[in-house]
Image (cartoon, rainbow, N blue to C red; front, side, top):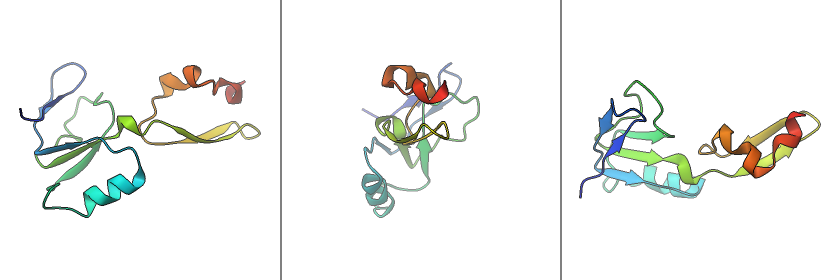
Length: 101
């Protein structure tokens, strides 16, 4: 079955040759080092909540949703560092709201 991704309202679709779900920076690096298996153009994709085709690719799409961890919390400065796939809406479920008080 072909890879197919559709944006949130169904107005944009893409059918990349490869659809990858990395869980680490090292996995992304491996994808980028293997153009035979993961052809260009390579594009990163979040939740595809865009009304533009900027994340679409007929080559490789790297879906970032599995890279969704909080890396560091700086409560004093009320900031945090997270991986690219973390959705802001998930923060309350991750008990990070204490930095926003």
